[in-house]
Length: 494
Image 1: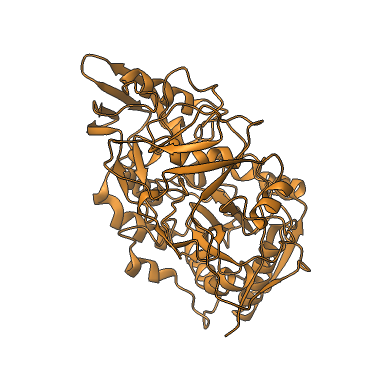
Image 2 (image 1 turned 90 degrees about the vertical axis):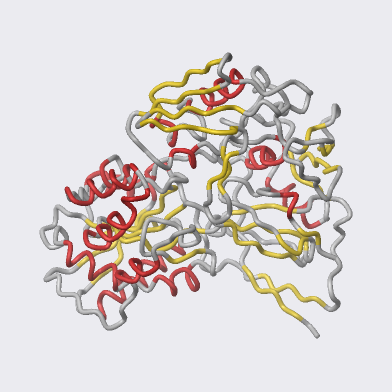
């Protein structure tokens, strides 16, 4: 029986920066309204050629795990390096390279494992960990923004510990430590020396599974081939030619024609949040009841499914709904109400960047729903530079935005910092956020307060698209920060 796979493919350029930039540094790329839909027809069941796993690698670009702008090289780190802590596909945090840790207010002390070796046979030391943390803290680093919370880093060779002092308390700080730890002095190598389950061979043509890895895990593939790729066009061509086994993309990025080969699409959760912001300088929108009514008028499910092609998880809270312990009952307080009545008393306009048609479509949908609820609403779509200028000047009533939250889902920047464009301010919300960052006991109050104050209205968390050849894998579990998360547990198809 014939099966049809209908999808839009939109590829992120492999040389685009992957920095955790603030919203106004983000430069969305247009997704044309007339982008072709690709229909793939399968006459016979597909049997994947999965005897060999091949990944892309750009030899001419930096493989510095902290500053590389090459997406392929960055993703490769998940196979050859390990972090202090891992963050799973359900945002669960677990220690990897530390055996224990203690927290004393703003001071975190980590005991570094003494049974871990690098791929060259040398032992992992506290000096390696300290240097990796300092490198990740650099302003140019992909992890620089999240680690700006750090005041100082010290290590003790005698005690085998690394101590990090924070600028303010954050009980979820461990989730920010999922970046690669590498051997001191190897940052500038063609590939850095790591403690991962794979290591590159001398010719830089293969990754070879390490015998007796400290994790005790054995990967299905003893060898992974490296395929040198220099351009985005070459990436697509080699995927089509089965010269590489997988690739990732931004489903809301630039639309691209894709050769007709059968693929499996895996939605990878991310911390990238789409939300609707309010201008509190407007006395109507300074009223939290009005903001709450607007939040309830947003049809998040339709936006995620229809405007963003099912590549999002709708959420009413600034926490990914796949997270363990997501407060579903509290989240219902801001659920969509198609019969909501909104009496703002003034017409509203949603500011949005016009270079992404999916975002514009989402805003048109929101505007239509708000108008049906009793408040005339229009959309003001501007080029990116004009959009950011309007945000900075407060020239809006509502605005549609996208931001990459850190893995601890800290909204300090959005509530108190540079991303609070609408100047929404509430003492109880600030106190609830500080309590939430201080420990688990503050969670319930934090989320209930968010639903009461509604400083902004979350819409959905965007997914990354991961493509593999059809039936290559039966099961996978890529995470937001590591597409090869728990790679040894991936089940091979066939």
